[in-house]
Structure formats: C-alpha cells, structure tokens
Image (tube, rainbow, N blue to C red):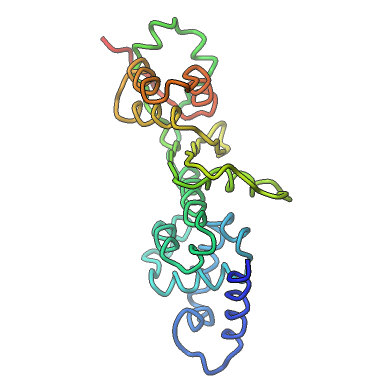
Length: 243
C-alpha cells in the first residue's frame, strides 16, 4: 500500500516540523485533546490495526479537529467517524475502511446497550413449529445489524484474530450481525437471507412472515440455518404470540 505508507511518513514529517502550528497536527500536540484522540483509536481498534497506530492517531487528530467531543465522557465518542472516514483520502486506498469503522462503532454501541433477557436455542426447542412461526420477536437492545457493498464484515472478523494471515475475501456484498451473549459482544457474517429476516423482525413481522419474505427474495437461502444463527447469537429477547 504505497499511498498508505506515504501518508504515514508525511504525518511523521509534519509532526516534527516546528513550523506547523495549525490543523490536525497542531491538535495532536494539544494535550487537552489527546484524550479525544486516544478515544477514537480505542473505539475503532480494527481501523487502527489496519492502518497502523501512528496513522490512526493522525487520522484521529484530523477527526477531532472537525468533530470535537461534546461531552467529557468519551466511551461513546466517534459516532460520526465512519461517515467522516468515507470521505478521507485513505478510503481511496482502502475502500472497505469506512465499513470496518462502522462495524467497530456497532460493537461499541452493543457494549453500551441496555441489558435484557435473551431468547436462546433452549427456549426455541420448547416451541412447536407452528407457534414459532406465529411469534413476533423483539431484537435484544444490544443487537446491531449492518449491510455493506464490500466484504467489510469478513475483513473485520479476520482482524479479530491475534495474527491474521493473508486476507482474501470474496469481493461481494455481505452483512454483519453484532450481538451480546452472556455479556460478550461477538459478530457474525450474514448473507442476504439472514439480513432480510432480521430486517423483517425489526419491522414487526412474525417469524413466518419474515421467513416467507426472505425465501422469496433468496430462494437458495437456508432459512432454518439463518434462524438458528440468529437465535444462538443472543440477538433476540422477548417474543409475543400473534393472536
């Protein structure tokens, strides 16, 4: 990635230049805003892993300059970062980077979300198939779903490995399911079928209605496997039988 390496080198040159007194580098020198810069790096760890810690702090400094924190509580800081990053020059070199940032953000939101009981596989087996089809289910407050035109979910998941090897995902659209199970936040790649099911459940469709809509859109999709993944992830909470 020659453009990325050049960006990193240019930042290091500018941060050491005493003539630079304005812009993102000047903010980088401002110790009162270092906490905000650190928060962006901490809240988007996969982005930092991809571009490197020094480049991440440079990008974070630019973001902080354009979007200073409005609260001293920084655990939730950076909601605008994925959209901001999409217009950054790095996005030309790494077209999946904004998507990875969005998934990092979804993970933060999942961590901070309210708690609620989980509807799991052990609850599902107690339901007759016809009763399950008539249910309307509520997504758990910590559940987040995203859809991307590039394989950002596969790239994001690959970087959760301590020492990822060569990453060569199929270059096609895919989705991500972020859920909190037993207090731990995890992510799963989902296909169009699973994404349509979750979208329907969020809109208030019954399980049967969501399954039917997904099967019509994705006739080759595995509806049973998609539902099993969703239920096992902890993505669901309460359910209500349709009258």
